[in-house]
Image (tube, rainbow, N blue to C red; front, side):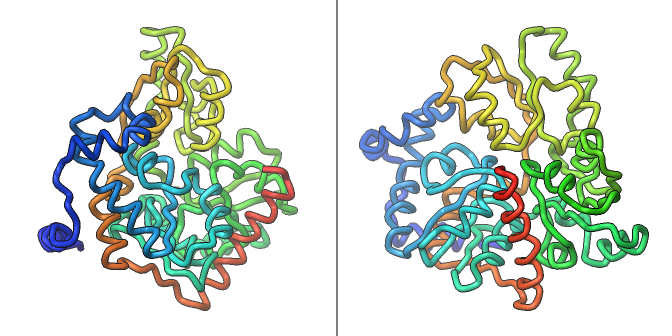
Length: 349
């Protein structure tokens, strides 16, 4: 666990992090990307951290990969690349910098390390976990194999390196259906998200069997709530993530990965959009779409929100915490992740 008092004391000795309206004004170009959702007072607080991080990452030869669920000051202020799990996994294989700072949850940092064994991968808070990743172990994968002999195992990237190593191929919410349909077997095992698996099964010609894990954010949404909201506002477009339950997905006008959601809203530009996913999604694209009113039924991921500007600066300053994956496990896990990337490219995803 991070010693926040020591962290702040040490950072204050090396950086001027006092709120600065003057620096905020100098960095107005960055602020314009988030001024619809971040107040001027908050930007004056964030600006010194953004400036320090952007300077330090150059000195450290570092790149910041940030998931779509990061808060706007991270997403717009310090990230070099943003995206969903698939986009970040692919980007991790392309970056030239020696250091990767993963602004997301722990399995994402593990994935970057798996794909870049020679690079230093840092995560600003090691306690940024994931309910899905914690719901299954490699032993659970073997249990599913014993129940369905010969069926390939397609594991969500929201899993530990050990689970990936025990799987045949990985998937993300962006490519899950296509990956499952590409398997040669008539029966496919999906782990660990039961709702993603059920939503895939509803569209696939395969028999999909699944592990009963779920996302603590997306399982909270209910079809009843969405119907009530649509009754109150019939013109709203409801866009859901496929980790939601099938009855929630059935209520949506569009269902897709976080990158798919971003693309859909940009393409269709509805007058009002309700993003049925993690809180920060709407905030991060609000300034890009000034004509879209975002209704936010806000369920926040407590793990994603462990990542902050302060912790990112500490991670770069102290070069911590480094993500390490056992070499034998990493090699097997890499095969599953690289097979996902290879097949996704082959399928044009």
